[in-house]
Amino acid sequence: MGQRLRLFELVDYKNKTMNIDLLLLFREGVMYEIADKERTCTKQALHAQFHPWQVPKDATLVGPAILGSSSSPGEGLLVNTWTGDLPDKTGKYFATFTEFGCIPVSSAFHTKQFGWLIVNLFDNVKGITDPSLLELPAFCSNVPTKETQPVHFSKLFQQRTN
Image 1 (cartoon, rainbow, N blue to C red):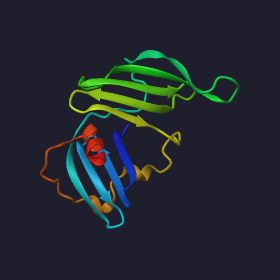
Image 2 (cartoon, rainbow, N blue to C red):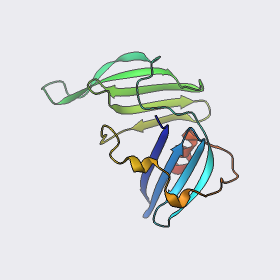
Image 3 (tube, helix red, strand yellow):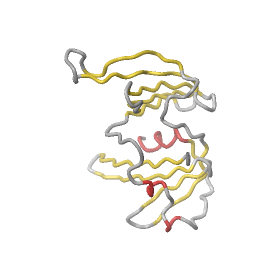
Image 4 (cartoon, rainbow, N blue to C red):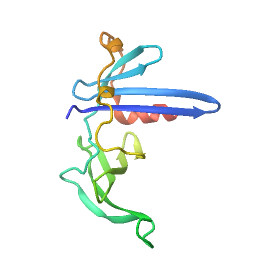
C-alpha cells in the first residue's frame, strides 16, 4: 500500500566489507541511502514505478514446476512461473511464486537499457516483521535532495556490483 521498499545488502569483496541500506519511497519519487551507525543519509530523486512482488493481474502462466525432487513427499517445492510486460512497458519479466501461499521465489526482469536483472528471494517471512523499517529515520527528515540524475531502480543493482 505504501509503495515503499527497504533494501539491505552486506557485501564482502576482496577483504572489504560494505553495508548498503536504501529506503525507496516510490510515491514521493525519492531514495535515501542510510548510514545508521553514523546517523547520516543522502537523498536522491528516484525514477521508477513501484512493482510489487505479486502475480500481476495481466500475467500469463508459463507453467508449474517442482524445485528440488518429486520422488518423495516433502522433498520438493511446487511453484508457478508467470510472465508479462513491466508496468512502464519498458521490458518483460518472469516471476516464480510458490503454489501454496503465493510466496515470491525469484524474478527476472529484462529491459533494453539494463539487460537482465535476476533477483532470488530467500528466508521470506509473510507480512512485515518490523514496519518501522519502512519509515524514514528522524535524522534523515531534513536532508536536501542531491542534485544528480534521478536513480533508476535497475541501476541500483548495476552500480553496486560493478
